[in-house]
Amino acid sequence: MNRNSGLYLVIGALVVVVVGLGAYIFHEESKPEGIEMSMGKNGVSIEQN
Image 1 (cartoon, rainbow, N blue to C red):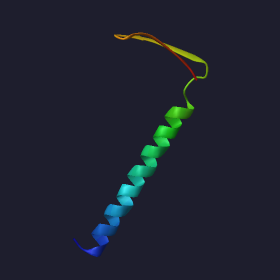
Image 2: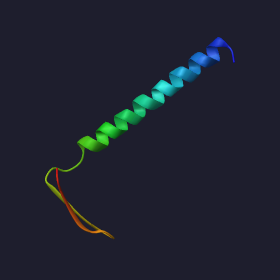
Image 3: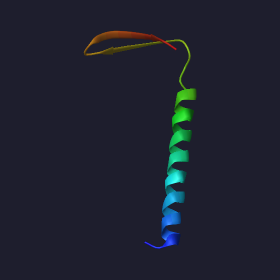
């Protein structure tokens, strides 16, 4: 592997991390505020946001 391809690999990895972090933050910020109820195999779960 020469120097340029290693540099492209590092830049590509950084781009993937930034895009992933941005998607995670967008998903967390777009959650509705209030109380969240869910029903699963362990019963009813109530969370306050």
